[in-house]
Image (tube, rainbow, N blue to C red; front, side):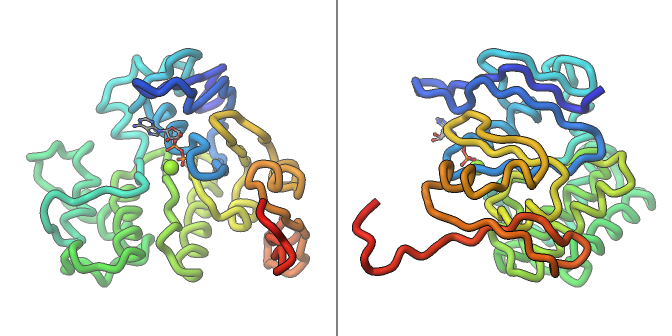
Length: 272
Ligand code: ADP
Ligand code: MG
């Protein structure tokens, strides 16, 4: 049984005639690292929110663990699925450790006390996300990349079974983008933890993800293994830019993954 089963799912935002999602059918297997690709506005965030049950599908069905997702309680979702949204504003300044501790709320309740198991989960999450040294700092004066890692730590502190991230590496430098993909991959390696990530990082997705979905205008343009989805034809069509796709042999353990290089058009190119 798949963890998530979406069948012919469409979503229309209120007052918008164009579908943000149109006829999306997909299965997410437990233990997979699913990367959601697609240009800006292609429906990635909408699809994540429909999977999470934050948005209701306008038509079609969304099942989670064999049950319609709208039959799940908030508490059930919160204890199993951690979501790192694309961006969020903080209502008031808070220390890094306090923010990561918020990840424990589904377990302790908002007014609940942090026990030793909670503190351990927070320590471990901060360690794994590379923010153990930032505990006493205020969220307000961190760099964008540091803040992003703290939000990943908060999600891990929740000790979820599923981690859903919306463009987690957008603000991260090469080192931390790599660490984030290595971490997502490590989490899924023993087979029961599932990661769903929307990303613009085609090359890292091609190396680390076990399943790719390429969205364009709310529709699935391609899905499957990296070698099936990351082809020059698919990428050019969806991103409207010429590319070459190669399979470098020296990328470490994930050698052979398709890698995209966009072509420069040069001075002779007139308009597109
Ligand atoms: P992506 O995450 O791939 O950039 P989104 O899922 O955010 O794409 O958006 C898909 C489409 O839905 C876009 O056309 C976007 O403008 C539209 N959209 C997103 N959020 C809303 C909203 N709250 N109200 C109306 N339209 C929205
Ligand atoms: Mg988005």
